[in-house]
Image (cartoon, rainbow, N blue to C red; front, side, top):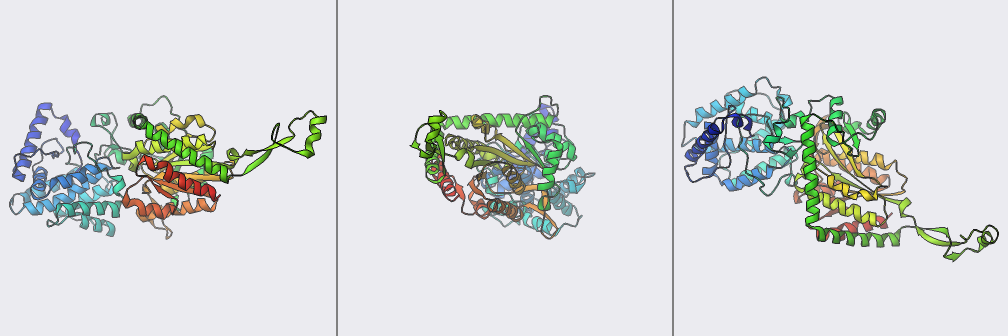
Length: 573
């Protein structure tokens, strides 16, 4: 269940301690174990220990291996919408734990109905279609407990049936079933969940829609107090509560002023935001932030991004020897490839091979450039774009992605190649395309450390935006390297070939991304991917990028693995 910490925190310190002790006692009583040190406690909307849900927590401790269950709960901690998925998991755990415990504690029947009615009362006056799907499912679960029923879509009925875990499942089976629900219905795969526990599970439960995530980034309760809140969660505030004009101002304040004026940007959107991406918006920026900002959400996002930039630099410096070695090795490998495969040009020179037909120019015109020599034309022939998936699914690996992007940019710059490094993420209907360094800015490689993950990822539209930018460059040979976990996921639905709207995730998102990669290749752009996800996401990656795919298990493999594919692509140009 999700945390309703606000009401609890508004109690006096003494009252908070009393309610914490009471919640712990309720858990101990239900678990039959007074030696437990529970990391999860339930409070109602007024901040008082909830009898029913604390009894359910105790039942989970009693009838299941809580350590196994907690590992998945902890893994959700830093995932995009992490508390949404924790909330959903606890809805399923309530169902099975209640059925196990009610035989020994018949009083739970009345307590359960009372709790269900409380949940429904808290949702009164809310438009359920404005709630995330997970909250709608939770509401329907408790509505049916209270004797009511709303009609769900076939898909929602399937999810709810899978979520209402039967009591006979083992702890391991509960975890696997929840992972399957996240994967099959919400597109949340292993790479979007954190394996290691970074913090204790928050005190949770009570209401709906008060998540502690901002643009997918985990922030403290104290920081969130500075954010103006409406009825919906912070997640809800960035997914549909702003007009298009308000959204444009918001993303500009968070990520940087737009590169293009309104008219030019409108023309780009008319060209790119069509068919599957109809109704979407684009924001291109170089990350130049305005000075005067008073919006609490914007200030919070800027603070999160600034902190992440510091972590990125620290991570690189902590592994400086391995990272520099990777740069040296990759530079050497790519440079050797360029010497072998890219064309030379014969240019006039004051030294080299004598060109007999123009010797007269030296005699009569004092022009001593009567020789010719080979000159590499890489600066006008080949360009490289590095595109980073900047969505919240990368939260647990931001430092690694930034380090790998810097290694690529620095190595290719040392080879004399023009390099551009960008990232993308999606906030509401707007895909933000951030350029860290451009082709003519070799001194700005370190700007890559400003990379910070946020929001969702509409990969197909980002690849279209990349194609648009590439079409306006002078380079004849173009290489695009993406760093991605290959898990497209966006809240705005996609227009299917049959005209029906579908969720932009799983099959639909992968198919769209694959189509855009193939389109780039048909236009003569060589495309490869440095895969940053988990084993379970590899099939998606292979479908999108085919053979031009590299998976890095350690930085020591980086130069060899990435260099091999770059060499193959340059050799085939």
